[in-house]
Image (cartoon, rainbow, N blue to C red; front, side):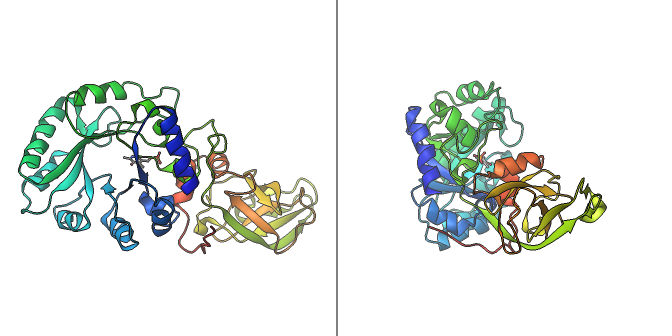
Amino acid sequence: MTHNLDAVRRRLRAGGSAARVWAVVKANAYGHGIERAAAGFAGADGLAMLDLAEAARCRDAGWAGPIMLLEGLFEPADLAVARQLGLTVTVHCDDQLRMLETAPAGPPLDVFLKLNSGMNRLGFPAARYAGAYARAQALRQAGAIGTLGHMTHFATADMPAGLGDQWRVFERATAGLPGPRSVCNSAASLRFPEVAGDWARPGIALYGASPFDGESAAALGLRPAMALRSRLIDVQSLGEGDAVGYGARFRAPSPMRIGVVACGYADGYPRHAPSGTPVVVDGVRTRVLGCVSMDMLAVDLTPVPQAGIGAPVTLWGADGLSVDEVAQAAGTIGYELLCALAPRVPVRTEA
Ligand SMILES: *Cc1c(COP(=O)(O)O)cnc(C)c1O
């Protein structure tokens, strides 16, 4: 995590940006454990996440720096907690402005006002941004808001389209308005550091996975923060035509040995990973066979004839097998696999 934070920072600096970094630790730090992330990202300028419970866990873990709530307050009762924990909040809609306008007096909250620059997920549309800003500015004068900044989120920063119109829409809507700016996720931080403004918001890159389809994390100088490992707990010898697993979805074309790995979809391994999904057994790359079960999956031992019960298995994140490669084989993205890691998986922290 520390290495990846440095790598993203170097990329920002190389692109001429002096942006500070919110390390995004939502979804239990993309499955890595939020306390572990708060330690790994000790050098970040702030932590960004979704919910108050995770913010409280970061404070309990000793994180005294800025914490940003990426979706802001969900209901008026959140305000007192946000004030108590000293959080920075996104304000993306009129309801959230009203929560601040009707709140009892209290310490000011730092706010990033969110513009919908074209993704049409969260944020004030460009035509209403100036009005929202005026209301936030009034709250600032009344002492309810401390720092008042601007943010937006890019939909295609990882794709050939790049930022599209969104950067121009953001520049136009915020022109002349004072306050810090925050616009870049991982893809935009790595590809468009020149627009990063005052605060970048990388997530996935900090965990050593790639935000890009055609560019590996290794090529970006990132290192996987998580390795998912298990062992073979059984070996079967198949004859020609013998089937493997539920639904008999794989049949041996000729006699072969298969290994049974203690890892299944209840551990967070994707059930929809088809036969052929890469896996490493005893240091040798091979493939998943048949349907992934709740607690087990089967692998082809043809290229690893020496492997027996107890042989080490890497599902992703080490031995040259990236989570992105496994995700691609399973028709999803590394993000989903990392944040779906199940609580039952024992975690060992290595320095
Ligand atoms: C999740 C999230 C990020 C981080 O995105 P990555 O693609 O993981 O870098 C940044 N900003 C917002 C608003 C987010 O929700």
